[in-house]
Structure formats: C-alpha cells, structure tokens
Length: 368
Image (cartoon, rainbow, N blue to C red):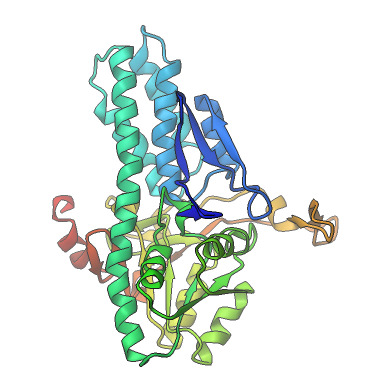
C-alpha cells in the first residue's frame, strides 16, 4: 500500500544490506512514520513482543525473517541446535496468533537435518522471503474474493453507500501488504464502489484509531472513527451493511480468535441480522483445534495498557496519561473467541466458505 503516495510493504530486507530486516514501527503511528532496523534474533523477538510489529500475517513474516537473522548468528558447529532454540524463543513471544508458530515451523522444516551453516542461511532466507511474498499474494486474493461479496451487497443497495464495520487493525499494517479485512475494502474502493468504513477505536491499544484510521486515510477510503461500544447502536439503526474482521487463529470448525471485543460485535451483528465475515489467509487456520473457546490460548498483556493511554497533546507532543485512580487494578486480555455459529462466512485466498468443518475442509482437503 502507499504512505504519502509511496508504495511500502510492512517488512523488507534493507537495500544494500541483506543482513538487516526493516519494519515500520507501529508503536509510533499515527503521529510519526518511522522505520526500525532489526539485526538479531533478540531484536526480532522484542519487536514482536512490544508490538513494533503486530497483526497475524506480519507476525508470521517477521518470525520467518527472524529465523533468517538467527541463522546469521548460528555457529557452524551446532547450527541445527541453535535454530531449534531460536524457534522456541520466537514462538514464545506471543501465544495467540497461529501464523507465528506456523512460519517458524516452516523455516525449520525447510532445513535439512545435517545442513551446514552457509547452506542453512540461504535456505532460511529463501523460505522467509517466500512466506512474506505469499502473505501479500494471499491477501490480494482475499481482496478479490471479498470484492465479489461487497459488489453484491452494493447492488442490493441500488447505488446507496455501503457501510462496513471493522474491528482492530486487520489491514495492510497487520500483514505484508493489502491486509485481510481491509483487502476487500481496498479492492472495492479501487473498483469504484461507493463505500464507507466504521472504524472501532479498539481499546486498550486503540489499533483501530491509530492504525486502521491512518491507513484508510492514506489510501483515501472514506471512514469514521467510533467508540468501541457504538457498533450495536449503528446496527440497530440500519447503519451497518456488513462486518468484516480479521483473525489471529481459526479452528478447523470455524471458531475465530481475534482482538478483544470481536465477540461482542458478532453478537450484535447476529441480533440485528447483519452479515459477519472474517477474512484470513490459510496460515491463520489451526487444523489441530476444534473448540476455540477451550483450546485457543488467550494472551494476557500488561495491565498498564488498560490504565494508561498514549496520544499527543495540543502542541503535538507525545504523551501518555493515566485514566483511572492510582490504586485501581486492571486485567488485559488481548483476544476473545467468536463461536462459529455467529460467523456468516470466512474469506480466504481459496474462496469464501461457511464457518463449518465440512466447508473449511472443502477448501483445504489436504488437511482432512
């Protein structure tokens, strides 16, 4: 996508220095656009953990390139053991998103058992770059499949503006390019469909306000920021035509783990007859799980994210303010699980299907 008119991916090898990975620092958005260099495995783990990079697909791509950076540090003697330890270190950074562990396993699987360090580094690089390229390609295909849905909804409205609600950031910033939930939106906007996006603020880290609103603005897509709890009200009054969210992990039966608050949007959509779609690349499926509520690990983050809110003051300076009494305790679950029964359909690179095990298997027969 574009930033100030210039095309960017969210992660890339530094031009002229392929031993350095560069990423957009998402903790600085929307008030500053900065690029961070990653040189080592530890720096990569820290970038994932502190959400310099975040979002299912981008976490996966970063983990893949983190394995490549680890290979540059690995000694000739004990290369395989070093890479196994690096894989464990990366996988432990964030537990909920399926893409992270999937990418790490893919790089490990590509390395022959007794590979030497030189060959291993080249294999790790090629595999990590393939993961990133496929992520961008899959999101573009999600956009085309989702475009058909949005075009049909637009035709039903006979020329009236199409209103879409999304939650958190499942956009270009959450993937390598295009995004998952936003890919159909960008494709429809480019196709000339008159649309508007309701952007949930997405407490406590406000990724909707700081990231989704920023990237939609960069692409010129009409949008309006709303409080997290406004979605149900909008649906009751016919102001939402469909909901599209992303996902961090989806079970083989269609249960969806996504940013905290997604479940409540799905309940409101179900109560008001509003279609609720989830967009995801195949790397986000976890075919080992059937029960999302019981089986998906839910990350609990630092309570300070709930008690303190970052922003900028009237002079444009970055500030962080406490919003509760000094002695108020807080808890901070990062994700919730939306049961498959509340999901109208899943949009992935292979097409659109119902959130049921048979329908998902029909798109992924090799996983049966």
